Length: 271
Image (cartoon, rainbow, N blue to C red; front, side, top):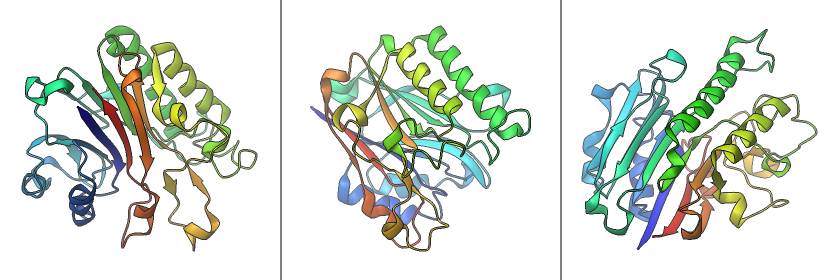
């Protein structure tokens, strides 16, 4: 069975629901995980997803910021949303595909939206950066305590860190820029490796290939300057690593009308 799972920071699901449903029609992932939905639950466009064939949905949101969602053509159960760092700020949602999902049954999917961290990479001067580091620490503690990689699992989302040299357009120029500072990249990589996750993108497309999933709105011509970063990630537990077949970044989505500044990242597994 081929299983396709997409992660996409949509930067307002209601504003871009047309882009999302077009993507679903043209690319047909089995599961779509969204971040930064920016929508309270009562205004979430559930009916649009149902009409598109994605009747299984789990979402948690807030007005104007944060928010995560999982929509699926396959049934799931065991929905859970963790309140990270003692804040109910809608940055995590998980589900487990159930017996109706065929060979994919039992796979857990964890959708995270890690804080961006503000502009100053100093936790003593910037509460947002301190929150980001605390969030990473809490993911580490959760991973040790719950051991999610003991079962077939996928951890994905906008992790807001570009960990490798070729995950950014200029390693040297971005070393003191939030998302690529040594404390962030080292912490994320230590967390990933110690908890037993595999970076799907770099497994199939290792360094020094440049890989980006985000391009700033500030660029007058994002495509020409190509100053991107790989902020969106898909990680696999060891049990799913042999199932990895493909991973794609839909770069063209950044050029769509009124796009998100992130593009969809899709993993294909054979389970």
